[in-house]
Image (cartoon, rainbow, N blue to C red; front, side, top):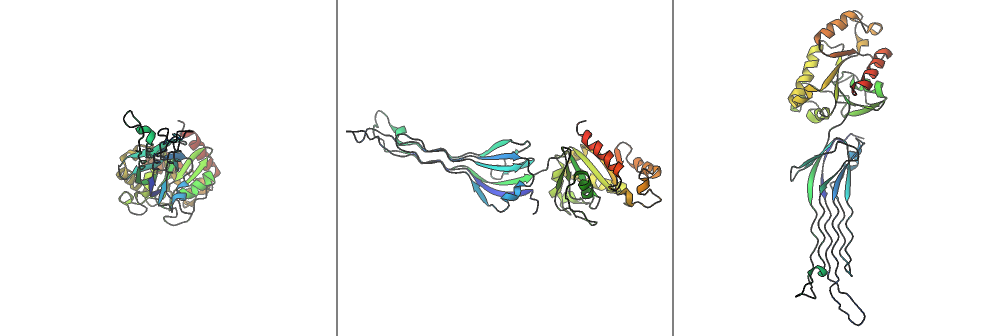
Length: 331
């Protein structure tokens, strides 16, 4: 099942029920005055934030959804029943855009409920038209149509940490190791074609698909996934330790973040040098992941930033990272 993070759908609020012409029937006096009730209001349309990033899947094949219409009025001035509201459950982090009005709403909390379309008013029954001059009104009004529009639904994941980096930087493998997630892993570019989430003792980590130079212009997986970084609190910048130019890899990603949204470069960032177990012996192998020459060289490239050297085969480095992640968000 593919992960869906954007869709378009037509939503419609309910039409109000019609008012009716009715008469009060009393014994000995068949027409004792107007008694037609008003129509019920059409149902509204609400967006409701839920903690389920995959829930958009259930709307994948829906073209239109609508609230129920209000019922017509009844006799003895009975008002028709209001139409049932339509509640569209959407993941926390969803941006909802009304394409007719350009009005946008964001769902940022679980249980947050936003009315996005108003149901139509119910029509008036003939009782409402009675007056000194008009004692037996035949007038009534029909219910008003509910509002409707095309909507663009766009999910931007909310996570404490976002794993970023070039394709094949070890993000998915690291997420699986940290959280027992099931992100697909492979030694080739673009293994991850959709975001994945993992949980580490209540801390949410998002594996953002690999970016390439030109991603902010739509190349590769493009800005489709860059937006998922916008609401991430801390960036975990993964860089392959075996890269021929670690600094260039780092700068490539930073330039794409800046081009897409300059605010992304102001987020807190932790640099993770991954796959250190794959380094040749002269640079520091698995049994020497803290090789001083290699660490000193890399740290000199990032003098003012926090740098961790990670191997999924080294329990000590993973334990250190887990400890950092579970306390860093609170600081």
